[in-house]
Image (tube, rainbow, N blue to C red; front, side, top):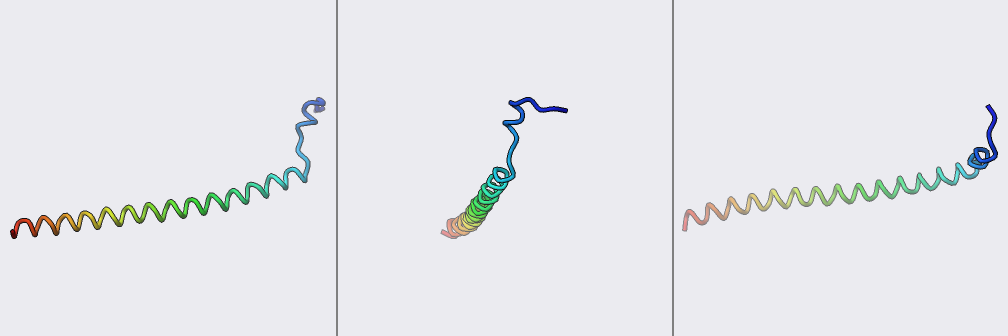
Amino acid sequence: MTLSPEQFNQLVTKEEFNEFKDEMMEMKGDVKKMLASVDGLAKSVKDFQSEMAANQGAHDRMSEDI
């Protein structure tokens, strides 16, 4: 199978591929950091919701006593 000049010009050189690969690895690290941050925030929200439910239960008990 032969390549047309347009197809040949679209081929990637080894250097271009390695540059692209390095950029993707950097982006992968950034995405991992971002996901870790989002996971931390999600845990904080979940803990806060549990704490609010416990506080509401305590307030309800105090209201019954009053």
